[in-house]
Image (cartoon, rainbow, N blue to C red):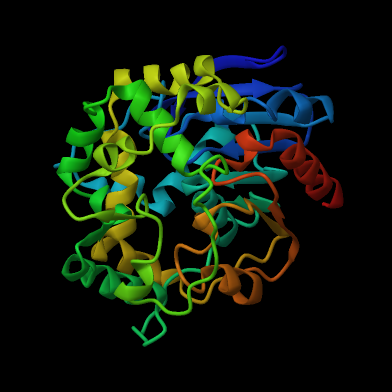
Length: 366
């Protein structure tokens, strides 16, 4: 870790013993939370922690429920996944803030699944989370009653149901199944090579990433997404990415993820397995969990918000219309929206200096 970054545990966080990386002085009244995505860790923010602290912020990057060295969760595919629903995960963060002796967060920043969590922080508790920065995964707003023809989650589920007729399956629904953890916990190529290929194909290093908006939410449109989002039916992610393993020369040139950094991810997921993290996907795709969120339908993010993603990130467009809905309806005070050249999905790791500058610009505007 960079100089000035500390590792510690915060006990009694909504039933968790939460592992956090932190930087800066706890006396600062400007607390910033950095939320990682899948399959990542608080370690994903290693390039930003010290620099944000140097700018006067007190910064925490936790291993979220289900991940890394945080303990106290159920990593059981047969367990009720409710503890990984968005309201419960927001409650984790409120409990963390309270355990720090605080009642307010200057800004919450989230990447990938952490982006969705950051968005829900702004929806549910704007009195605690004063600003929201989303990264790589746009937020279209909570689902609503009644079920309408333009209801995003329902339309996406219907489109996904049509994919098997095209010989494909959606990665989120795949990750919600018991076979996902079996595949990913023991990948045929080994954990290190599996994660190397997975990080590679979703980065700007994989030149086939040329994202663009999709016009409709239907099976045929989803089938145009790259294979790591809409998989060959029955293959699974480790086998799907194996054919795209980068060459030794490509690995050497991938300075944003050197072997020693990749070894941190490989070591942690080899130790913990993936099921704790995959509980989040069970909530994302479960009809019961989606319907539970409809009570918040019509709520928007009314605190200052922003969005950052890589220009080569298909995640911006993987749910047709979500990017536009975020900007036009879901956020009432969106003050920044930036697509970063030379970055794919792992934007804060691929272009750490640019992301840091954008984060500082956003934070200084608050």
